Length: 272
Image 1 (cartoon, helix red, strand yellow):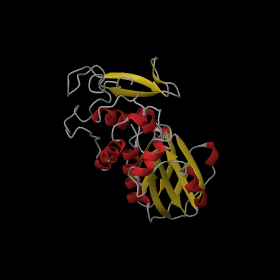
Image 2: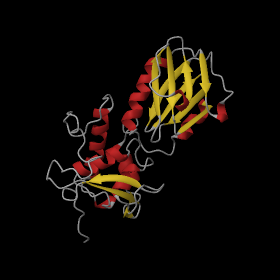
Image 3: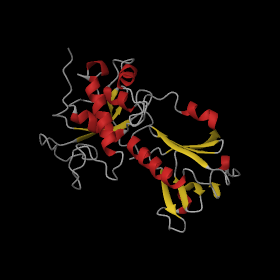
């Protein structure tokens, strides 16, 4: 699932293929930009911010967000694409490379002067030069009664965490995701752990939070419903969670997210 570490790696891959090179051909396969041609422009910069990715060519910036299903691939000229062509939303070519954006949740092109506005509302980027644990803490605690699970997912608090890391962070720190943010013991330790987790995985093809790279052992709880917890043996649970807490339903709605947890290791604290 694309999260901040995925976008960081994607930006690095596109940077190596495109940055400093002239675009020889561009194709935007969305109606809004179907007639836009950036050929002849030099790619000046490629950078991520949380889950957002930006490519600057001349005075234009291509902004994309992978959402749930998106991906960017970089191919050597003539190399066969690894995904169906009908999924491609944009193709950027140089003399040596093709960068293809597939099923992008957001794809837009803007002037360079407008690019900063797309991330101005976001909290500090866990993998960026602006990472600031104090600012992230302050943003989370502006809503002290909010469950920590939803607070971690809110990109306005800190940028880069999705469902996978949220589940793993809460497990490692022994937190029920419904625990009010103000009741989290040592919130700074939780945020520092988030930074370490994403930083450790930013260059890995296989995400790992357990320290064990064996197949099937790389994550503590995410995706392991009905499997035993490796700490206590209790079966891992999967829930849908919204602002009000756990909800019922087979599929998440727009306001719900999936969370995995161990009900023993992450027992909900009794109300005081």
